[in-house]
Length: 311
Image 1 (cartoon, rainbow, N blue to C red):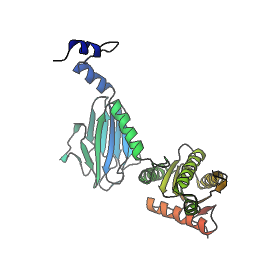
Image 2 (image 1 turned 45 degrees about the vertical axis):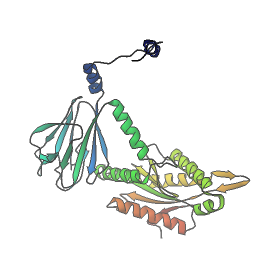
Image 3 (image 1 turned 90 degrees about the vertical axis):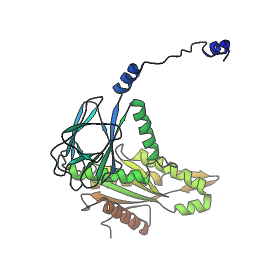
Image 4 (image 1 turned 30 degrees about the horizontal axis):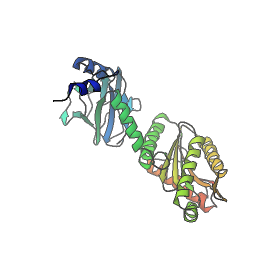
């Protein structure tokens, strides 16, 4: 048996040991609950949606749906979701092919539990997660960390694919323009071979910072791999996109790096593709066009902007 004086010592000063009632704990959790819906398969895999309290939203193939998912077999307005602040309800809106919750066909309206999976269309599966505020904040933090490149803190290639896909779908739905920059750091292998990879890594970090400082807050800077970057620029026409790409190129050209008594200058070759100007029909074509334009810029002498229409 522990000595009483030791127990009193542990509980001295301002320490108060309490155990909240179960009722109070439940009240605190339910008042701060949040709901996330994640597509775990289908054309929008990885995309996560948040449901705010007292939200009534429809999901379907229509551009007018609150959440649009284009998948074979999904009706224009397929399901309705409602979050009353403590519980989430899903209702099938007489869809042509039905809705399945954990493999059972949905009839009428049902309350969704944490971890339930809702299947619609040929390949789309949505997973529902009910979290309290701390859980949601931690989940957001983990997702942010997993989507970032460790070296540069730009978004990584997986996040790039997600962002480009979602912004392309939104651009088609809203008839809005979209630009993509594919960027290569000129002669970067020579820098690594001459000054070492630690110097090369520092230069990549500084270039990333300059890219983020130059572009608009809505633009997404990603490290595509090695010394290649990609920037997704929503709601920007081809002329404004070209001007922004030129500003990016110019700002990096003016950067200077010192290694001992040596000065290093870096430049960028940037390929630009535009929607709808380039008649792009899919995301892979969007990337291929910008990549092809970037290699045209490199062949023409580097440190310039390339367009798919260039000869």
